[in-house]
Image (cartoon, rainbow, N blue to C red; front, side, top):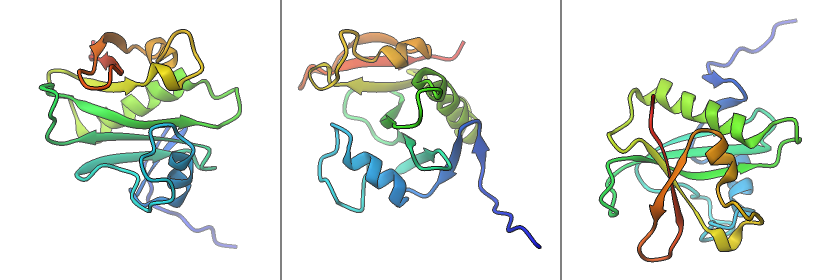
Length: 154
């Protein structure tokens, strides 16, 4: 029996998929940041690195494009982990950052950032899994007061 081999880059728990991946869209629909539940498009226009687990129970999106916040950074626009608890979110974030660097090379001067809405997460420490993965709080967004976290190499 022959086995079908696919040329899909894989990084630890992640594999790279297209930005129209249906498993990712369904996970995005269950995330608090989803703007239009059910819409086929779940990524920002522009260059997106979309990663998901083979079973489709977690996904990550890194976006690079023209920013309006003055930062020269790439942004994690989506991360959702519904995988079993043995897949720690902090470890998955580390692997996603490593995959991003492997795909795109060195990050811009302000590194990789993400925003967390402290009012919409069930944590007294918003962004805890990102902090455990090496991100640090550097402020908040001007318009909505979202927690701003940053990852710098080194």
